[in-house]
Image 1 (spheres, one colour):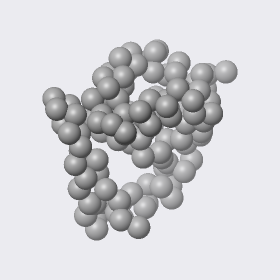
Image 2 (cartoon, helix red, strand yellow):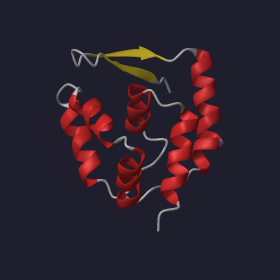
Image 3 (tube, one colour):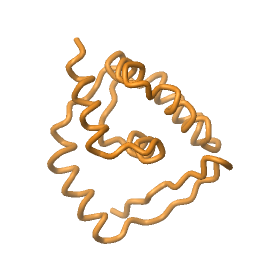
Image 4 (cartoon, helix red, strand yellow):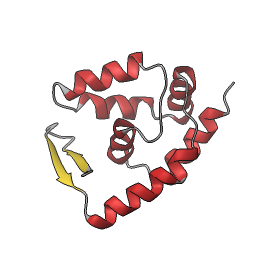
Length: 117
């Protein structure tokens, strides 16, 4: 399976796709099999609480607003209506990169969110 980076120019909202290098593919496969696989699925209230408590909600909305159609509509619908949120979701990873978060920083927020009862 070939994976692609979705690069978003936040000034113009223009998206381009760049294929992973073989090294990035290997890293992504290893991550999916180990770290990301152990992070729990979040419920909507946990995900939204994480966004608010971390101060990242407005930043995420700015990233989503910068997307072009139809990607923007789909992303907003997923945010609004998803029944669960997975750390290994492509949209989550795209938003992480666009927001400038390291994988480790998002993993830490994710684990904190999982602890919200």
